[in-house]
Length: 115
Image (cartoon, rainbow, N blue to C red; front, side, top):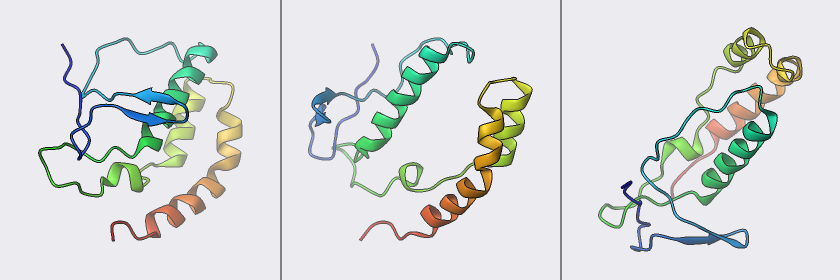
């Protein structure tokens, strides 16, 4: 069975947006077909929900700022290229947004974290 991840206070569940969440280290599954818009939308919503939790590590370690949740490490033009190669319908919209996404990436990565 997959191992749940404890919060810094030892709890394993957290209330968020009117629901309860429990985070696991890893759960096996299948990668959805990217052409399946409803599955992709659902997965994106779940990923957004997980990231909004800003899970504070384990009860067994001192909580640190987790860079994954506070830094953007993404090559937007390369993502557009991959989207175009996959012939997804939103690739052209993403290409149009790249300048703004790069600007926002710089803004997020320039913000202080921690204390």
